[in-house]
Length: 191
Image (cartoon, rainbow, N blue to C red):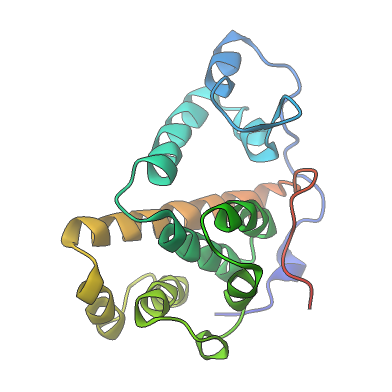
């Protein structure tokens, strides 16, 4: 897997967020996150397909608000997935969310580095390894699975895989459509 994919990312939007909101889209966007009354750019781009956006928000909302996985651990997975996919929009949005969920800036920065560069707990290191395994081969290795199984139930393991898969899908969507960072949202940590 190539680690330098930044050159293949569009620098400009390939699909602009919708500007005219019809009745169906207004209903879907009513519950979406906004900045100054405007939907986040991801929702504006997905808004070109209101029926899909509605279902996207159902799954995404469930994973963010009603899942079994504690929010801090969920954000470790999402941030590492976003980093591995070089999805700056995803990483930036979840930097903001991760901070609210208890991750500090040193941990968020460490999610952009090899696992050995930070003193992670065994449980956190297993989550990072899961994200890395999926990015490398779309399958969690036996060693990682064994480490995850120490803490997580089968239902939680299912959810962890769905969280990782959902945010890999989101990252690919964001990268391919060129969704731009929302105002005030950070990108990748500065080096």
